[in-house]
Image 1 (cartoon, rainbow, N blue to C red):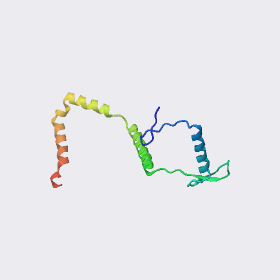
Image 2 (image 1 turned 30 degrees about the horizontal axis):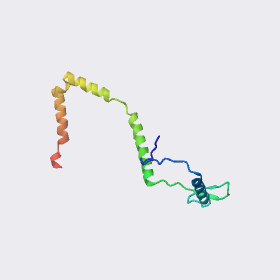
Image 3 (image 1 turned 180 degrees about the horizontal axis):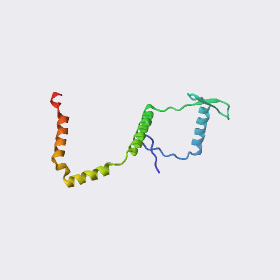
Image 4 (image 1 turned 30 degrees about the vertical axis):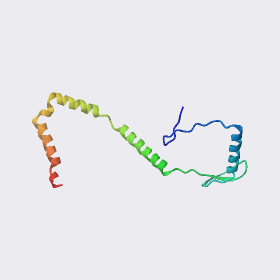
Length: 125
């Protein structure tokens, strides 16, 4: 099963370290453990009694992505709350078309007046 990073790139599969690689990794870990990291959250290392600070930095791109996701989720919830009336309206329009409702003089005049009102004054722009 392959997994992707947030940016869509593939994660590099991990492998088991042989004994010499594990020893080097352990030495690096021990060496960096004594160096406090830049940050504000502090803990006391129970093994060595050294106060260390941990940091977490979230990039501007990640924050933007998080905000975009929150907006998307809020929009999705809003859309879910809209009642589904399109099917009813479509059925009503189809029925009126079959009955010839839209061919009546009254409907034609109403549509023509609406179009005229919409385009009135367009020459002045």
